[in-house]
Length: 466
Image 1 (cartoon, rainbow, N blue to C red):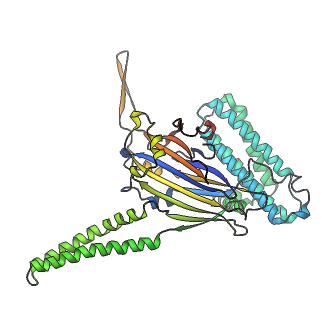
Image 2 (spheres, helix red, strand yellow):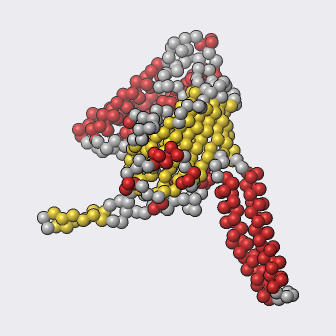
Image 3 (cartoon, rainbow, N blue to C red):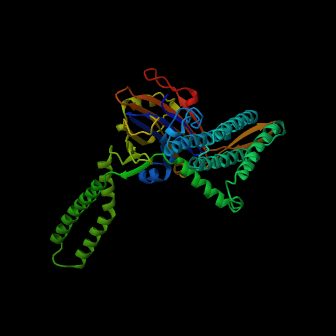
């Protein structure tokens, strides 16, 4: 699938990202097939709690590639540029620069081969050096503009240093690549000296890890101003849920009233037996009241969106896009035929019963109201598998082998395979499909691989999209 990129984010999370342009009307469905042996379902995992605790999204303006917004050509005439426009271009570059470095570092940490790791680290170090030089070469002279530049420069310098030091701290140390290690450390030392020379941070701030960390967090929020869209999330169906609660209570009371009338007919007068019977009836009412309400609500809620979201520009508060979000456990019979057809292509050993967690997001992007020069927004959504991992078993099995009369054994981990099917609908275009296999254990996602679709479907995405 060319428009959607799926990859591992942290040890127990995955991320999908895509870009949308003005006027796009896009619907994205994600079907997670969780094997029943994992013990995850509607009875153990609350969809609403999972959404608020484990699904994190970020929507922002997007520009293809890391094009420097501060090159001389773009700002050749300062009189025709406002401070607001300068700050927007500056923030867009700084934000994308930081995100790019962050993503590259995460990719580095997943490289197991030592030689490949250090070559990629050396390349990243060179790219960071060149981008910082070009960025600083176009430092503005106007004091009104310079304060914004210094905030972004301070943060990018500190952030790049921290990310590179973090990589080296967890890397396999070897004398074969001592020159690369020294180049990375030299860059970090130079950046620290650069911030000192420009008096970006006070002595008290530099000496206190909490103060420097909180200051950089503030600077990160400042460079997101105007780039990351403001989100207004609203739960849907509140009135319908109240109506469902009232209807469930009425149904339960109808049954209880009928039983009370029947009990009064059986027992003559106000006796101990009647009191005990009424107590039992009211006891059963309390037991089944919530069950009836939850069952009725799940039936009424099925297929309806759970939340609506409005995306606004943080500078002028204009509406950029509107979204509807679904999250629910589905019944197998409610699956679309095309999704079922894809599942039938699984190997026989993988055809196990599964609970289906369905996430759907429908987005309508406005035709106007974008900041000048930008026509694309990017959406990135992280799904944490930590709530899933809590239900998984630790590996307890052992594999035995014999060698020259000696028997040894090794402990093995219990692994689970989660199937993920993506369905993308862009306006009136034909839907596009993709299937991924997510192999995980209790502590980490082992790998994410893209599976081949049946010949009747669209061709799969390129390997570098995964």
